[in-house]
Image (cartoon, rainbow, N blue to C red):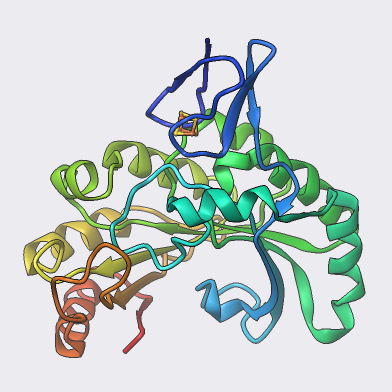
Length: 282
Ligand code: SF4
């Protein structure tokens, strides 16, 4: 049995078995990334799609995903590669790429507007060793690295990533412990601590997906935006917040898409506290 210390779950994993996220395995008494180099998706995306609105706007970034996730959001739009049975099956037959190959590809796509690599689509922190090894090479080529993450990890993990991660979009999915623990299988306090640590060393933007009946209250957005307003990015600017619209997906089909007027109303509330507020999927 070995203990994984990446996220709040601290899984105790029997030898040869996977942790809760499906992305870490116990081998020889230690826990390591099970999907190291296994690629689920690869695309040259506009940076705004991550979403990052205030980090090299107008550029493109080579976006790479793997498999697994340590949350259980019932509305996951990437469930084919995160926590469904389909994800586990797809991982078994996935192509692999070494960090060197990805860094070379990043460099080769520079003339198409690529600025580096974004680790995204599934939760990259459950395979942080691959992120670290690839990002170091990308950085050495004078390019940048981005992580799109749920922020559900111990801040100690960031010590290894700090030197090579330039920007993150971090989900701040809501602002109640109940929503995080009962609805998402997460831990809000860990996410808040992670965000506070991340803004110390890289550009951070946050994303809140508004789910009808769950996290769409005015008071919740008031408290969330007030908390975010205390933080500053390393350049001294305020933290951008992306408020986006939910659509029925995966295990959450019992309600309609978020009304556009709800997203716009919550964005107005957030603007009372924040300088940079963006709406998504509207
Ligand atoms: S990262 Fe995965 S294996 Fe590690 S504690 Fe979290 S859920 Fe468990």
